Amino acid sequence: MIVSLCEDSCRVRIRAYGASRGMDEGISRILLCVERGKVDAASPYPPDLRGQDGAEELTRQALIAGVGPDEILAACDEGMRRIGDKFGAGKAFVPELLMSAKAMKAAMAHLKPFFASGQVRTKGVFVVGTVAGDLHDIGKNLVAMVAEGGGWEIVDIGIDAGPRKFLDAIAAHPGCVVGLSALLTTTMANMEKTVSEIKTKYPACPVLVGGAPLSAGIAEKMGADGYGKDARQALVALSAFAGRLSPVSGARRE
Image 1 (cartoon, rainbow, N blue to C red):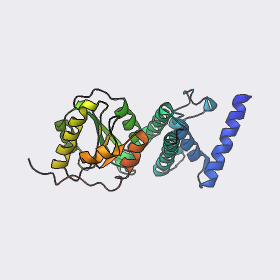
Image 2 (image 1 turned 180 degrees about the horizontal axis):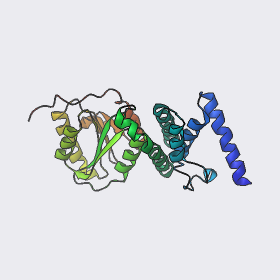
Image 3 (image 1 turned 60 degrees about the horizontal axis):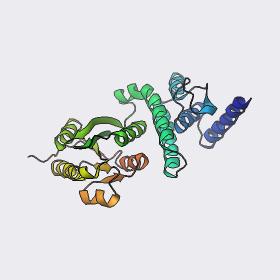
Image 4 (image 1 turned 90 degrees about the vertical axis):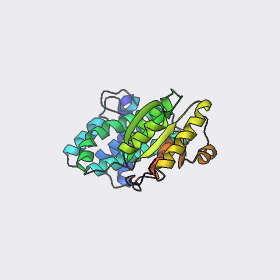
């Protein structure tokens, strides 16, 4: 009975939210699954959606029913925005954010053919890595997951990445945004050196930085274009460049 009441309450919320925004119930359910982190029917999380279809099944069903991929992507984006707002307000935490990113990724798996065909465009390419001398990757991986869930193509160059590795990735992905992560205070000099080398060769390439030792002031002093205190802020900063990127064809010669 308790589960039934939860399901009924959930359906009421879905219908109310969708109706207020002109969405059909299927799209509203995808949005809710992304916001709540409901990946698929087999997932027991969240408990009040146990046994129900998740983002994976609902996206597949919506495409079969003829719903446009752009409409599905917009619903996923809204779901991520809502969980991001909760995270920023302290009403949601890293595990919830990760589950939402996984739900978004499950939906995106069905949309990839539309990205490949050009029918739906990604927001851009995000090259992300942990700077030289730092082997920590939890923060980097979280940002990458959230960014991918937000519609970005991710190129993860890993940990302990020196300037050359970042420069090679930029050359291979013209028009990308670059994200540098670090946890150790001792690697701040390496991060600053990497930002400087990127900006010297690719002055138009947007560079975002993040990590425990950083602040907005330090990021600005380094010459970075943006700073993310956490995954939500990183996505907000990253989104500011969406739609304004162009291939980096004017790299300065060494």
